Image 1 (spheres, rainbow, N blue to C red):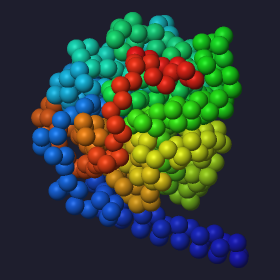
Image 2: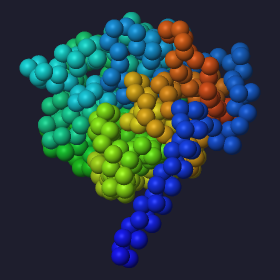
Image 3: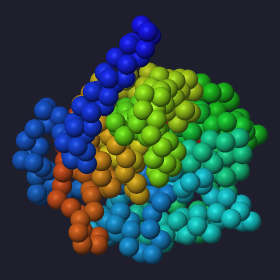
Image 4: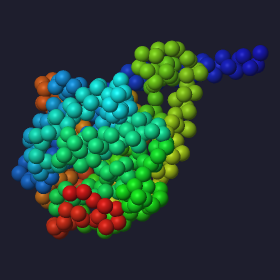
Length: 419
């Protein structure tokens, strides 16, 4: 009898908590949230006559874009590219084809996958700037043991149909790879999926990689950042290092009651109480795509150990389907994975800004050294942005180094580079 009363009490408390959570979520879901430290951001903007040096669009998880020319994010990205011109770069942050990357030609899902990838390549074809593709867990067949073949197939397809684009790191290597974007502006690309991937992963010179073990890329990254302290640096990888969303262990009240909707959006099978074990598992133990999973946790810990030693580095990722910005320990951490889907993200914690909305982040680098973050989201008209929901100056002019011309392959000695 005592066990019955305890179970009833736990169930009642859980029900009250879920109702409270649901009430809270109804108030803040899909609304932009800005931390108190950034209140009044609307009044702050770059000087109107400040000359731009370079612009970088960071757009992730485009893998489910509309293929009929009406996709709002692709249309907005095309408008951004037309305005930005050749002194700009588009970084596609992985998960380029849902649900499982680019299958073999005989696979029944091949035609749909090709249409989704072609829609992105067509949008980028006339762009005069630089394009850099990264891969994500879905591009590696959701981390399954045969994912390496999927990755190589997608890389070859992009290189064949858009030869001007870079697919980095090449051949599925872990990286890091450097790309000199402009004077004093360096992009460093990591293949974060490499550390959480099952099955075959390329390693060593025989596979065309500079890394000889799982620790070497972090040592190379440290050397690159140390040798390029005079530059402003953007590090790009698919997996976030901070996140208030699903992969960071945050779930909605609905997902506690209907946990199977995480697998299929129409799987409304009520599993109260029992259903809460699934979010708890994802938060504490995690699937391989979650921060809590041992592989992801080790990769994240090693990467943060390096990045925390270099103030003002900007780290950009996708993976979670929303827009998030964290300013923590003098570093700037972006989640820009809302290219074709949106998903729950919780305000608070270390987050400076979050929004559950389609769109992407843009980084504007000015001649005086200022760096501004802009949030671009589709508006009502095709290709037109909605009113800006957040912007922030990440780096002031005072932190800018003296202009030092760097060759296109700067910083490549330890880990390789791309033009």
